[in-house]
Image (cartoon, rainbow, N blue to C red; front, top):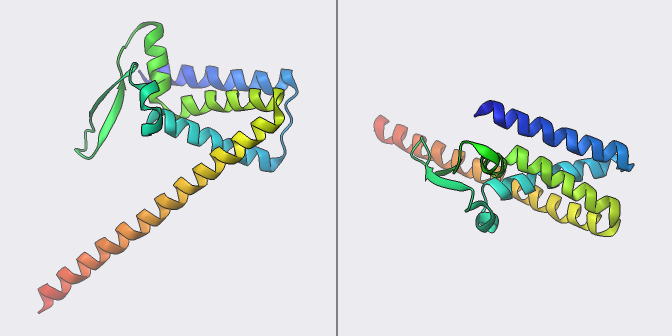
Length: 156
């Protein structure tokens, strides 16, 4: 299963590289950052978020995560062309790579739309990152308060 994901990832990267080289797409360093954030958001949305659950549903089965916390999406099939699509949908890096390719194609042929999509998705990606960091700090603070309270009760 891992080799299939690696193959899909390499194929996706080659597709985007071909698009960049042969189509003459030129991006500034800031646009590269926006593209990376946008691709990350596309991959995350495709593999995990509810907004694209309708797209993911035909290809994946949702099972409880092995940790017991939350759920995990697994490919519905293990062989054939459908399994490749299922792997693509389950893997945020793979789907993000294809998302980057689609964004680049839009940027090449309709620059205003491509730029707007990059801005919107990179802003969403940064908003998610800020929420994640905030929650991480809040959970860490909560855990430390719990630990301090336990230590205070133990010392009394």
